[in-house]
Length: 350
Ligand code: ADP
View 1 (cartoon, rainbow, N blue to C red):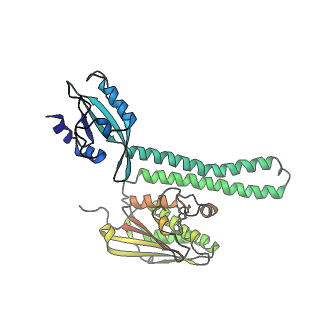
View 2 (spheres, rainbow, N blue to C red):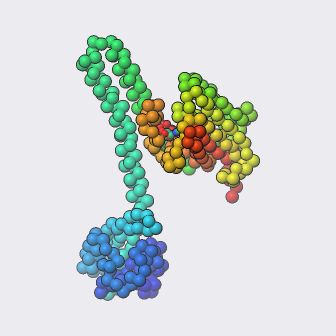
View 3 (cartoon, helix red, strand yellow):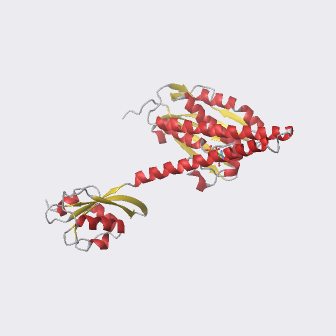
């Protein structure tokens, strides 16, 4: 098999560089990355990045088998997307030149980036209440030491900040727990109508406090499906609480449960639970990002309401675990609608 035949069989971008420093062959994946018509040209015309050129030059000085392959990071672009490759340069035996193979490491790089963004976000979220707490401790030790009125006021704020940190830690734990078991579909049968009813009863006082009417429909008869009762309780708590928090003060939040013989999105029988509020709504460009961790439309408002920015991320993961769907629609000035669809069948028959 000639190097030209060989490179075509490999499913990653692969370039053969002859001993005379010309490109001997490249496979279709490499042509996608570097362009066509490069065979016969000097390799520098195609592979211009200094780190890679250096790796090739150092490999050219080696005899095969003498040392390990050299590698370099290579930044590429395909269909407008930035990609990161690890390019490995391996000298071939005899006078055959060398092979450069490109492994796409973009997903690992992205995962690493997401991890460090997440840590930065968590630190930032924790630092704000911590700074407030340290500041008040200092004030209570110093200027406010003998001022009972100020002391009470500061202790109230400190309690609120501590509660915020507590909520954040709870939400982080929920998120990590649900991510851990996201692939394991729940097997218990639970009555989602009853879950929605108890959540609504539990949130009655919060709604009342904001003068919001909390209405439920379709929850009189049971609606059984395979589910995790605690997690579904969390889903409807988060959605209804958001409806109350971000909806119109003095308006209503309506939770409607509907049974469907077939739900197209789930390809089978299912239940939808829709939580609709009469708030200002959410503009279109925010909708797609709402379920990202720490994504908030209005930072100030969310924090003022004691929000952690993790509620909808938790909802999305729990719904995924149940093999359901979350749909968010909103009309500016009219309100928002969060619809959870859950399958009623235990396992999809293939
Ligand atoms: P938070 O703890 O900030 O409420 P969530 O993940 O529950 O976090 O929600 C993310 C963001 O989505 C909120 O900060 C808010 O900006 C927006 N949001 C959520 N629910 C609603 C709603 N019913 N109406 C308007 N905006 C909402």
